[in-house]
Length: 357
Image (tube, rainbow, N blue to C red; front, side, top):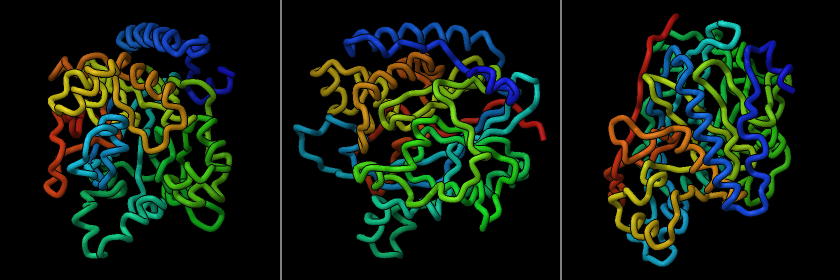
């Protein structure tokens, strides 16, 4: 299997093989934790990626009940919604052949993604004029690349931690629609790709209808385990939120940032350090190490293990070691319309390295 990726300058990762095979969830957790620490130590010996930037794209209201699963089960919700800030990640790196590549992680097609059934219903309950207030857009993928002077044909790969809300046909094209990124290929876990071919109703509420229909199969690269794209950069399989969920792992500035939507804030990854009383109390009373983002709990035990995996790989945040350097792809952030929960630590948009054009 590994030989399939060598011509692409990639390497399959075997560090986590068998770590989730133990009979008990607790043993699986400890196996994954041990392997994650070793993986982190190995990654810290590798070179940084050439360039790393996260860009604020668009905000969206999101049920607090989903964002912090379990926390408010025995409490009244004064503020039923919080606000997520979705980000685009632009990564430039050298693959294992030494070739400079451009990866876009979580490139959101903001207009077409609104067709996701859950958000379409939510928007339908509001006046059309209110959408810019409830879900303001700051920039677009196209505007961001133009500002960075990256041409569409220079994008090699696009990827998402999972395909919730994502409409891919604009980026990859179909026989009737030219691709905006003519040379790009989608990197996606095999389980996630198989999943979107036949969703259950409990899943389809979060996926754009027909979002991958008509895309040329040659533009899709699937992987079964985890995948190293080059030194200091990997897509690590972190199942649970969806079966094929994977996380972006990037080494920059002698630290590691891990990105996904398994959790929606640093409070979720280190709840016992949270200044949000409800979250801290829940963690202290139950003993949980993480708080799941649970709009679709396809495997809550696996998601719990995956979040511990993510924060172990990430390690302490340089600016506040009480929290891990988990750069959530959709981060819960303050917004005047939803003043309920004030996050303890906000990672925000990041930028490291020098872009080579």
